[in-house]
Image 1 (cartoon, rainbow, N blue to C red):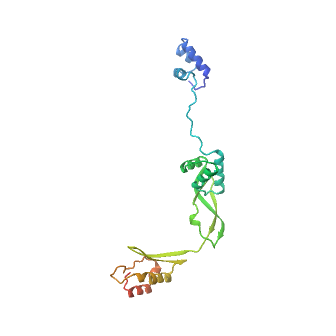
Image 2: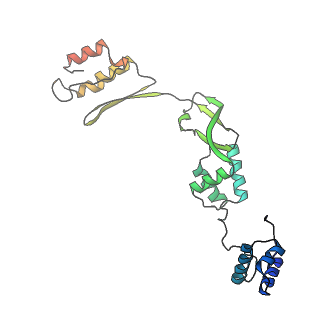
Length: 233
């Protein structure tokens, strides 16, 4: 017996015939329904007073983000795919009076088709005299499914510095900073002028200088100075 929709008045008519003494098999034959349906209609009528089940008072969770706010979020990611969720949360709270958790916002964006992906950065300007901020730029962003997240970024550079430090089991002894990369002469000056004055002849404490295998750390001149001061390497 195939599924077919039966109006509420026909269901009630079937129940009236049942109460009038009709056999269940005759009612089922006349209305092309199963006995199970007939019993279900009667139970529903006894409970609700109608053969149609009333709508459930329980409703699904209300949408947290309105359509206008969601469209605004899409517009934000269209102009800047690198916007962080924290920034978007503040925007929704200030401009749309919407308080939403980061996890709920993430799920909402995914349902809206805004997925997280690696940013494709395009240089819009290069400035050799400013600070290099590329390390602080975002690496991931959001864009509609099937579209790349393209971010126009200003690549800028600044002067570079090298920091060198000497330390013992008690902590740092001294540090030294040079502009650019450190070479053999810079390292030699650092050891002779800053480190050796705080060391003692072997076998006293702080009498052994441990260096890695960096090429600028190993010169004959440096070894000669260490030997003259009784410091072992």
